[in-house]
Every structure is written in C-alpha cells, then in structure tokens.
Image 1: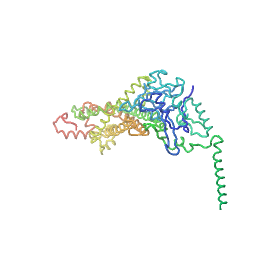
Image 2 (image 1 turned 90 degrees about the vertical axis):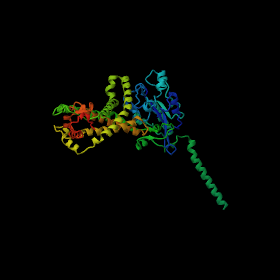
Image 3 (image 1 turned 45 degrees about the vertical axis):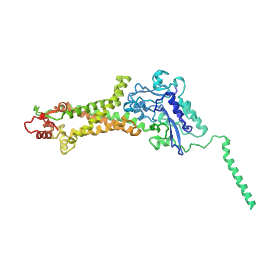
Image 4 (image 1 turned 90 degrees about the horizontal axis):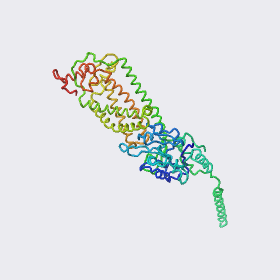
Amino acid sequence: MARMKFLCDADRCIECNACVTACKNENDVPWGMNRRRVVTINDGKPGERSVSMACMHCTDAPCAAVCPVNCFYTTADAVVLHSKDLCIGCGYCFYACPFGAPQYPKVGNFGSRGKMDKCTFCAGGPEADGSQAEYEKYGANRLAEGKLPLCAEMCSTKSLLAGDGEIIAQIYKERVVKRGYGSGAWGWKTAYKETIAT
Amino acid sequence: MANWLAHARFIIGALTLIVIVAVAAPASAQQPSSVNPTASAVNEDQLLQQMKIISGRGSIPDAKSYNLEQPAGRDWREFHQKTLPWIGAVAILAMLALLVLFYLMRGMVKIENGRSGRLIVRFNAFERALHWMTATCFIILAITGLNLTFGKQTLLPLLGPDAFATWSQWGKYAHNYLSFPFTLGVVLMLLLWIANAIPNRLDLEWIKRGGGLVGNDHPPAYKFNAGQKGIYWIVVLGGGAVATSGYFLMFPFYATDIAGMQLAQVVHGSVAVLFVAAMFAHIYIGTIGMEGAFESMAEGTVDENWARQHHSRWLDEQKNKAPSGATPRATPAE
C-alpha cells in the first residue's frame, strides 16, 4: 500500500489560493472553515515565501494521541481520518496539531465548537465509500474513485503534490536537481520525522 | 581634441558590448541556473530554530490559520498524554491510600464525652444550600473532567466507542453548563466565609498541636480551624484558577492564541486533579472521618460537646451571643 503524503514545493507556490478554493468546493466545507490555507511568511518583504498547508496525515498523529474519545483512525493508505459520530468537539486535537489542521463549526455550546472537520486527503470518512452520508459529513471520497486530492490535482504551478510519499519525493528530488535549488519539503520533519535529501 | 573624444567613444562602446555579451551568454546557454531566485527566502529549519510558531499572513478571515507550524503542539501532547495523567493518578491514588491508612490507624474521631443532646446551629440554610450546590457541581465537573483524561483507558473499553462518545458528549455539555453555578458558588463562598478563614495565631497553635488529627489533643479553634481554612483557600484559589482557565477553554481563542489555549489547558488540568485529590480529604473528614461532622452540613446543627471538642472558641462566642436560657436552636449561627 502507498503511504499518502502532501508535499508543497514552496519555491513554486505563487499564493493563488486555488487549492483553498478547490478544497472548499469539492468537499462542500461549511462557511467559516477551511481545510487548506496558504500562509505567506515575510509577506511583501525580501525573503517572502508562501506555503500551502492542510492536515499532513502525520505518522504517529498527535491529534489521534490526544483525542479523549479515540475518534481518529489511520487508513491502509496512511491517511488520518476521524469519525464525526464519535467526536465531541473538545478542541484538544487543535492544541496538539503542529499544522493547525482541525477546524470546528461554531455550533456547539456558546457558539464555540461543534464536531471537528479537517482535510481527509479527499478520502471521506468511516461511512460507505461514495455514500451520501459520507459526502455530507466529510466531503468527497476521490481516493476511492482512484483520484488524488483536488487541491494538488489542480495546482497551477504543480507546487502542491499529493500521492504516495516515495513517488512525490522522487518528483521533488528531480526538480531540485534540474533547477539546482529547493527549500525542502515543508512540514515533513514534523509530520513524518524525515526530510527529502536534496 | 576631437581625436581623443573619438578614442574614448570607441573604448566605451567596446566595453558595453563586452558587458552585454557576458551577461547574455549564460541565458542563451540553457544550462541549469546556478542562481537560486529564492535564495534569500526564509527556510524552514532556520525558522523552527528561531521561533516556537512559524506564522505569516493569510487571506482568509480566520487569524488562527496564519500559523503555518506550531511544533509546541508536541509539548502539549506530552503534557496531556504523560504529565497530566501521572500528576492526576499519583495525587488522587496517594490521597486515597493516605486516607485509608489514616482511617485504619485512627478510625473515626469520636465525640469524646458523648453527645450532650444540646444542639447548636453551625451552618444556616443558605450556607448549606450554597455548600451542596457547589459540591454537586464539583462532583459532576470532576467526574466529567477526569473522564477526558482517564476515560479513554478506563471506560472506553467497557462501554465501547459509541456509548463512550455519547456519554462524553453529555459530559462535555454538563461540564460547560455546570461551570456557571460552580463559579457562582465559589464566589459566594469567598464572600460568605472569608471573615472566618483569615489565618491567625490560633492556627499556628492548632497546626503545632497536630490539629487533633495526630494524637488526641483538641486545640482551640474559632468557627474554622486551620485545616478547614486550608480547604477554604484551596476551594477559593483552586476554584478560581480552574474557573478562569476553564472559561478560556470554553470560549476558545476569544481572548488568547494557541499558546494561551495550551497554557489554559495545562493550568486547568493540573489544578483540577490536585483539587479533586484535596476534596477527597475534605469528604473523608466530613463523613466517616469524624463523628458529628456531617450533620453540621446536613442538618445545620452540631452537638454542643462536638463543638467544645473541635471549635471551643467558636462555642464560647455563640454562648456569649445567646445568654443563658435561650434555646441554641433559636439563635442563628451568624
């Protein structure tokens, strides 16, 4: 089985935010929440850099470790998913997540937290693949259809790569060799405790 | 003169041509550029060394999303998964063991001279209602709170994921809503009993003489002895800390950022488990630990001999307030 990962080639990201929009649209992510976002460091200054970030589907995922009701599970493709039927909206996964991936609708007590929502690597949830119930809770299940996450699929500069970790690492390595530079795979050290040697 | 100018023109022209050719050459060569256009741009390793949170600017309204990475989440995970369960388990189990041991050694502290049959009012209806409202809230808050830290290891295997999630969901609602009456209770307790809870010289003597717990001495005390004052301050300060940190958690990110939220949870969890451990001691001494203690909070009255044994100065005060003949029942404690 593949080990699914995201890789943002930050030297290519042009901060167009199309990945953010594509994700929201494909998964019908509720108003006020974003499973993916683009962060620009040193915006408008020398040394500016944009990185697209969502759930990295960590190895030994911190969210799963701290969840008090064990609502997380890891699929055979190493995608970290969760059950909204079990989630109680405590917010702990957000405190533990290094990437700020978990999102909460403001529907809980005092308008604070409902059931958590996050990037599913376009792989839905525990419901039957492609079912209406799955779509309503978790959005699209493109993986079950043999497709990769839409954010990466439609990235105009192919900065955002999604797929088997070894394959996308290889693509990235080739790019770095060809162009002669690369800022590394952002977040990989934190998420997978490994980097891409370039 | 004109000759010199023509020379100069020729030299400048030639130099310009050389420069143009030199600059244009690598571009036309189509070789991989050794120039990194983003060489001056920030680099992840460097940023991670420099700051706890890598953040920038985003274009969606959610300001929390401008943080790209916060490795500090790992520290919080360590606290939540290891430190807090350890503090909690050690504090609570050690306290329970201590109480069991103490009970086996000392047994129930009896009323030495037996009951006199004369009752004296110790806590009026308002004080008792306040105590039990706060106590009920506390017990539910404690159980639902401990559930979040220890439930996964203990209850989840017994109940199964669905039932445990449902119970935890209701637990969260109860925890959130009962925080309000609990906070009100703590604030009212603070105001109602503070005059009786200020430490004084008598407390030092009480502590020196073992408070009647160690040995069979019965040092004098006013309405509250040093031990009870300790419980009072644990409730007021501990309750204040859990309430304040709790409201930060309940209204997430209204007043603080991710680091503040993590800190609030650390304070809330640590203080809460120690608070629970302390309350076990309070419950012990108020029930099986001491004869005649529970009725003071249940019925509001205590036997005069109990009062003489444990709160002699307070009894004297009450006696002076109600001169001979007056039935103690008719006299309010305050």
